[in-house]
Length: 210
Image (cartoon, rainbow, N blue to C red; front, side, top):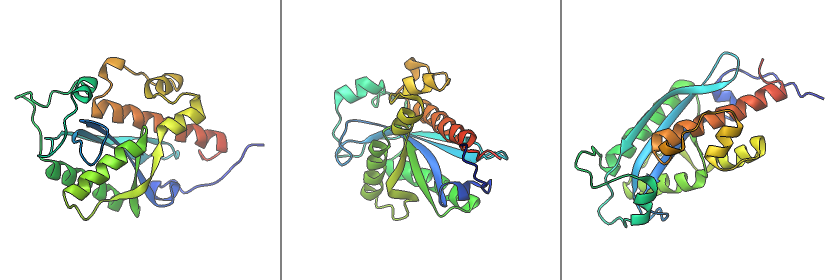
C-alpha cells in the first residue's frame, strides 16, 4: 500500500528544521587534527514548489595548509591538487571557513531553519575535518550540527545498490566524469545531485510529492 503523507513544502519542515548543505573537502591526508584541508566546496539546496530538492548555489575555496600541517605526498597525488603551484590562489584556513560558515548561516536564517546539517559522501570524513578546522581557527559559531550528517554512500547503497559516488551516480542516471573526481566542487555537486535524487525518489514513492 502506498504511503501518502502531506507535507509543508518548505525546506525548514522537511528535515526537522535542519538545513541540509552539501560539503566536500580535499585534504593532505586522513587525520583531521594533523592533515590540512586544501580545498572545500559548499552546495546550497532549495525546495521546489512540488516538494523536490534541487541545487540553488555553490561556492569553492582553495586553502593554504596551516603551518604545522602534515602533507602526505600520496594524498596530493590522489587529488591531483598542487598546493605549491604559484598560480594557485588560496586563502588562510580561518578566512575560508569563516566565509563558508557565513554563507551557511545566512541560508539557515533565510529559510527559517534552526541549524545546518552536513551532507557528504562518506560524510563523517568531511565533518571531522570541518570540525577540526573550526576548532583550530577558534571559530565559535559553527552552523553545522556537530555530529549528525546525511551520508550519500549509505543513501546510495539503499536507493541504488551502490556506495561508490561514481557508481551511485551512474545507477541514478547522473552523468559523472571520473577525470574530474577529487575536485571539491565537482564532488560536492555530484553528491548534491545524488542526495536530491534519493530524496526526490522517496518523495514520489511515499506520496510526499504533492
